[in-house]
Image (cartoon, rainbow, N blue to C red; front, side, top):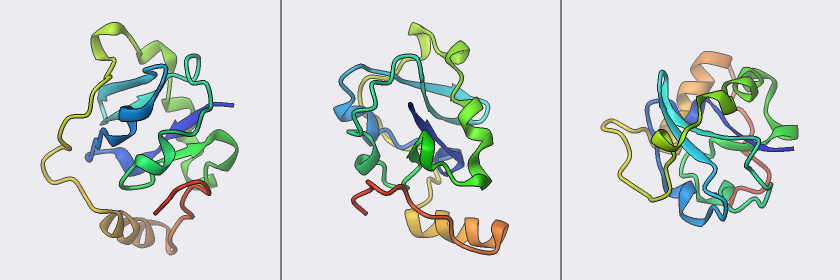
Length: 121
């Protein structure tokens, strides 16, 4: 089982999660602009989950049904040395807070999706 970065990261691209990743399995993609985890490299250590300011990272077994498509979007074929991210950098301009992300989810789905169980937020 790997960890999955979901829609909560799109347009935000917080990189706090890469700070403690022991295997550097995060990659920045442009369409949509976000981070993804290479499931072939992830060692399921859980270090990244509590670091994400918008709780975008879920254990694969906990990805909400509304975000299941993101499991496939964390595609190892999108990962190369050129887009590997190993250091924290600033978020994207206009990045949302967790509260704003949850409001957006509530408007889209009619309810707030659950945060990952290991999130410290």
